[in-house]
Image 1 (cartoon, one colour):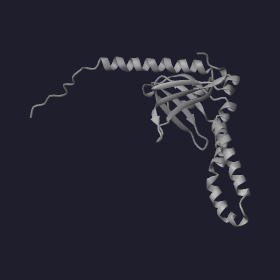
Image 2 (cartoon, one colour; image 1 turned 60 degrees about the horizontal axis):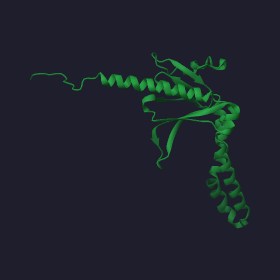
Image 3 (tube, one colour; image 1 turned 180 degrees about the vertical axis):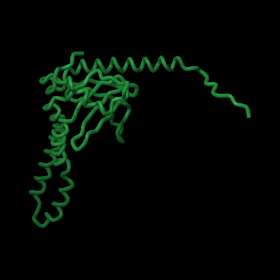
Length: 203
C-alpha cells in the first residue's frame, strides 16, 4: 500500500503507546470536511428539534413562560447538543489519527487531552468499508470494525476510521493483517498438548 507523503511522520503519534515488538503498517488522518460532516445527521435532527421547541414557546402565553424556560432548557438538549457536537469534531480533528499495527488497530483522539483506543484483530467479527456520496466526491471513505459490543437496545457499536484516503486499500490491508493474526493463533492452539499433566507432587 502506498503511503501519502503527508503521513510519513504520523507513526510518531503512536510511539507513546506502541509496544517495543509492534510495528506500524499504515497511518492516516481523516479528511477535515467529511470528518466534520459526519456530525451532519445529528445536526439536522437537532435543528429541527430546536425549531419545534421555538415554535412551541412562541405560541405560549406570557404567564406560562416561567415554566417553559427551565423546561425547554432541558428539553432542547438535542438542539444545542448537535451544535456542540460539530464544535467537538472541529476541535478533535487536529488530534485524530488512525493506525494499522501488526497486533491491533489503533485510534488516537481528544482535544482536552489525548485518548487512545486499541482493537485486537482476533476480537473483530465484522469489518465494513463505507463511502457516502460526500466522501466519494472527496476520494475518502470510512472503515467500521465490529467487535461484538452492543448498546442496551442491541444496536451494534463500531470502531471507525473516518474519512481516510484510499479506503478500499486500507480495508484490504486490515483484512489481510487480521487473517494472518487469526492463522497464527490457530497454529499456536494446534501445537498445544491435548492434556495438561501439570506438576506431580507426593505428600
